[in-house]
Image 1 (cartoon, rainbow, N blue to C red):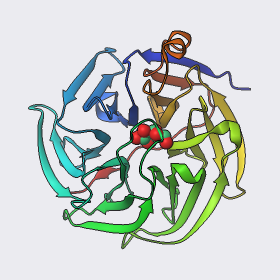
Image 2 (image 1 turned 180 degrees about the vertical axis):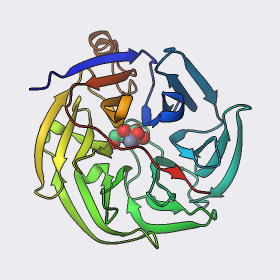
Image 3 (image 1 turned 90 degrees about the vertical axis):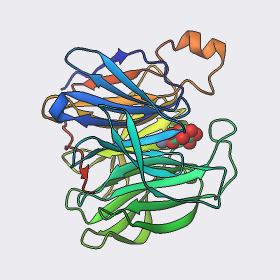
Length: 299
Ligand SMILES: O=C(O)[C@H](O)[C@@H](O)[C@H](O)[C@H](O)CO
Ligand SMILES: [Zn+2]
């Protein structure tokens, strides 16, 4: 039996923490606070955090093969130079949708940066429906659009053999899969692999583990769940001491730890008193399963 330990390692008070990414080279966790328009890098050795402020909501961050990072800021795919904090725009989407912004994003095994959009929320999960689309930024900076009619674009990850793309549109309350063609970046044959149960609430960020099982952060559900995408069964539930769990990734030594982000926005004063670590970064150890290294953008 593994003994699971859950610890708040950083009380960052994120309004909406998201997009945790482990950077092995610096033993650090990258993440964003979307409405606070900031990117953070938490050094797990020194426990220090560095922050970069940007001029629009920043919804995801990823490693870049050339060095530095890429991030989705507003409706732009951007490159970020951490040293001088400069941002350069690689591509812009949804130009005619002035109320849209990017939401979650992640790099595929071939180095393409996938991210979807959504209408800006007036309150958590309250927004104009069907305004978002899913895109990817190819290494040559060309953008491919996959589909539209998305409510809240989330998820996302790829199977270990790179033949399946897993995706979440949060307000569908399901985890979906597509066949994936790694050579071309094409997706096809959408199907549901898991329907959320009522108390699991809203599916948000997701990552795959080294056994090919999916971990989904349950927004308002205060937990991460482990799913078997082949059988559609839930294998495990890990509850956290905060309700608004938003996303998860593996990191630490050999990717044996899980990091979970969460949100404070949408909580009332009483809720914040009960959950003082809301908006913090949580580390889960003792899961007995490892993750895999994140991919880096190839452009
Ligand atoms: O980070 C996200 O995915 C959204 O931007 C958030 O606002 C919430 O998680 C969403 O409201 C839950 O569906
Ligand atoms: Zn999300």
